[in-house]
Length: 535
Image (cartoon, rainbow, N blue to C red; front, top):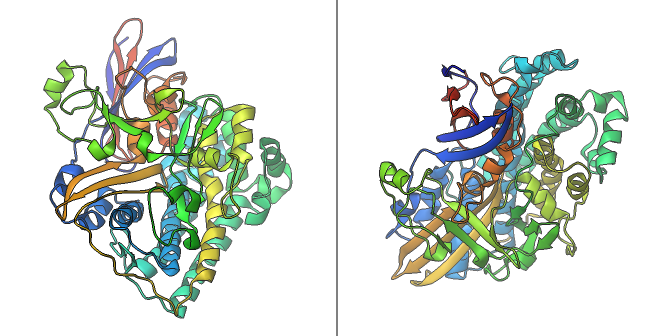
């Protein structure tokens, strides 16, 4: 088979550089390697800086989820400095964090994922013409409205944060804003408009309360056929089309999940601590592995660098973590192949294993037992997981399912603001301490670990959702979540492997990608896809 170079739509359409090399045998992916091709070194930049430098530096890690970086960075310092948190401050942080995710849901779906649903490989589907009409980039009827209206939730973020992205208004002890009644009523109006015009009118074809009545996979299928409005909504159409073209048949991944949880009940997190974090969460954290749930414990997290371009091998907890880069050419001689580290979690009785993070992980955590009265309990995706298993389709459905849920939460938090009370409590800036802050960004678990010595940052480690998902093999040669999810994917056309794009983009990994496809029997390169934009 001849070798060819083709420019195709990218596997990741957000930021960064990722090479995905797959071995293909008889039209099916049999192995995969995810290779993060860019070194950034934010941990090195922060070393020796003022402890509050993370509030300014980490939001610059990402241009689309900078608010999430600020949120967990602020809580890392809150726990290290043992601050007091006014209720209003917790509510404002919750509101802004959730609005950033609400922005991401339609923007990701239409601009990053649904474009591939118009690929010519699906022209035989009876629903193909309708997919093109709705989802074609820039000109699709749903694409246009979804992308344009996606900016509305972050207008609310900007009202409280002063700007979006790259705001730094969350600080240890609260937030640097003093909203007025006009700010709150304007925020409510903006979100109601977004809900009316996109979430209910275009995406669901029904009220958000009707959608949230779905508790099983059978409920979802019945919901699609319930009436014409739901059947022809973007959500109803996506479910029908995805089932028709087989997006429920591949992309399963490791089948084990991690969510660190996010959003706090203000009355339960007045004095943030690492130990008190789980009980105060509204969006629960947790581990789901081999059919069992476990409480999340940050002490069980490690980062393995055996196959990463850093000095040494093995794994360390982030408080002791090191970021010592080496020349990639030297690293390749040692079997290293990625700038990403390999986060792993020590599951009781199972050892250190790779875990998938993201909306599906959050939904699996939400379906776990023992939810407190203030916490999210949602059994829908546990039922879907048990009925049809994880897949590209299920991962997407989990993401958009959070739109109605987060909308209701934000409206509740806005109603609970007391504008006569404080939004900030000045902390004591302790010269020594360790802190942990985490949230659930749109793409999954996002965490900071900070060590403060002599009033300076002695160590700062960030583990992003993309690191959890695209990390390479570890010392035990366990594949990372995306590597595992690519295995089993069918490749109908090796010169246009849209299936690889579906799998990688279902994780919404924050990377732009280059892909090399190899025939497993001959070792010849089938195609090389150099991907730098929407071409």
